[in-house]
Image (cartoon, rainbow, N blue to C red; front, side, top):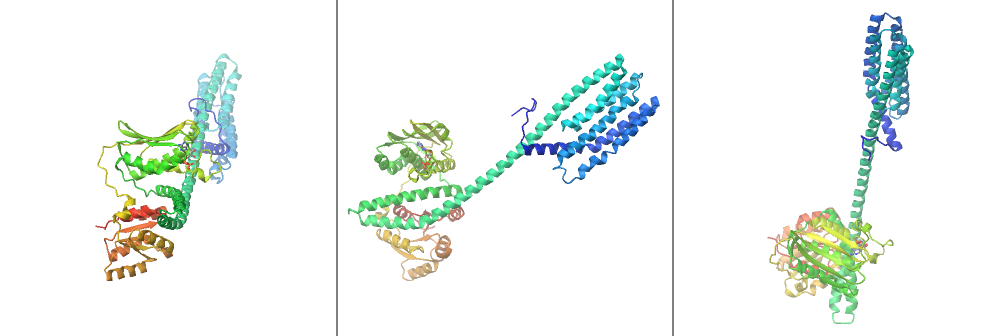
Length: 591
Ligand code: ADP
């Protein structure tokens, strides 16, 4: 950008030039009233002094001329009444220059008409008035350069020529001084004009940029909302059937245990699990964008977390012939363990995906007031110019055909969201062909006793599950699948499709003294009924301490917000069988 004190260089676009002209013309006309009044007073005073001293009738002739040129004033004042003055700025600029030319020429005639040849004091007064007027008027006409020229040149040229005409030494000297004065004043006027124009161009360019930025932000906001809505809708519709498949599949896999067909069932479940993971990824984006995930920060040992990630990825690394090492660590950090595991899993998943040979190493290092978790791989690396984009949504290097097997391009965008949510900055160091390092920076904390955790797998056998459960779900398939799954763990499940039938089931349970130990509700029931409301009503009516669990395929941010505020535990479809059992096992009666 050019500094305004140096010679400003201007190359505004057509739109900015139009706005600048409009503003300049408005500035010129803004002073026309006051300057005309001041000029009239000056002309009359000058004539009074000259006539008093010289009694020259030419003074009165010039005053007449000056009065005549005053008649041009209505032509100028019309500008203020023109409703389209802004669009006709060029016309009004020309008219102003023309009127200034006439005005200045009248003043240029004054020395010719009544400046005495042999009265130096009166000559000096004339000189003073004309040069003073010419420079004093510069601020009023500086907005337009043609106006400056029309205003200054005729009056001072008239004075110089009249002085030079006298041809004696004194007058020639004064003519020369006046010419130098004109040149200098024109130079300063030009500078002032440029600075004013530069300031205007800057102002309009800034306004245009701010406008563009506002529009861009509105578009980005709209796109982001649409994307969240799309994710929510797609995710909900896919979750319903997948939930049923996952539950049936788990029952099937259990039934086929020890038979040759079990491998097919296990493969099927792996596929279902992969599909569920993709949906979870979409759900993560919706939930993170909706702000419904509140991190629960706590002192967390890193070792169990590393073990969990190792379990998730060990077989995949093995299949690719990669060495996956999560180096055991005694360190503790302050974080939300589930969200950190999710974040770490995304990084390890990518590291394995983009490493054809060699290995992946996850290691925690202690720094004075932080803990670094480094996920290092010996993979393909990332070109420096790509690094700033990889955290954008749907951004994938080298996947122009959007081959789904190469991922969705949102893994790192989730990493970014999670890292912002947890305030664990991520740093990336990578060299193409040599591998990548993703470093998480976490706050360190002192070690604490780990909380006892009940492994989900044990839930079925340990007898910690509720014995009698009522499920409200309008989808028969899901009811059947849950009955089969929970039945295999010794849980008696009664399924009803709506609130009215649930009331009947509760009433019957009370009369037969076989109360329910837990209530599980689907969030979206038939005819749009709200499962959360229904569950809360039933609980209030029949057993205010009854544990309630919500299962939902819902991902719309505002509904998720409502679920979160209710404080009712929630599982998102498709729910893996183990997760369902673990959630049921951890349900406690409300106190
Ligand atoms: P994707 O589903 O494609 O993995 P991500 O958002 O997880 O989407 O990653 C975005 C891009 O960043 C990937 O397409 C990949 O090119 C690059 N990338 C991420 N992690 C690594 C890594 N460890 N090594 C090399 N490239 C990586």
